[in-house]
Length: 190
Image (cartoon, rainbow, N blue to C red; front, side):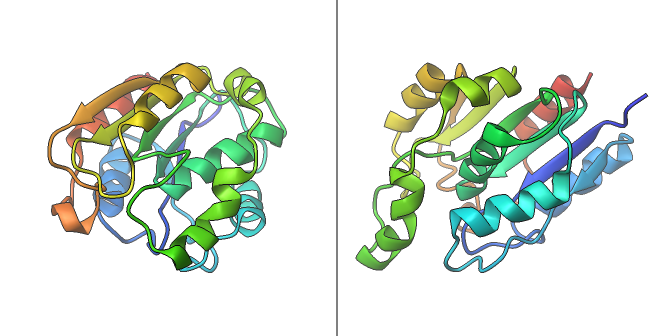
């Protein structure tokens, strides 16, 4: 029997010990789930090749008990990893503040985000490997407009939830736990 595992990919400028990630890790481990939350490279200036390469290395072969949790650019990393990863389909994923385009960023940040926004993703390939996708958005996210909600529904068949006043689901919102995300993840693993 294959072990249930969750791979958590943090966001831009973050690390595995930030926001709700330690709490989620602890809750899942108490339920017998193997959790990995790798520290992504050069987090202040994330690059597609380096981040996807690090995730590929961490995950190895994807299997039916592999579930992903991503935050912000971590969601982009997971999508790009799944495009070409070896193995079978994953169990699914839960994305927090995912995006295909950003708002409210500086010119310097837009230069860093540009390749992530402009490099196409093979959505058919990702959908074939990601049978279940949930995505959380906030009404007041300063970086991710709610236009992204419809895009994730259309392009990837995501089941989406819009939560009130969670901003970008990080320290700015005071989030050190995320019960909705835990419930979604555990439901997908059963």
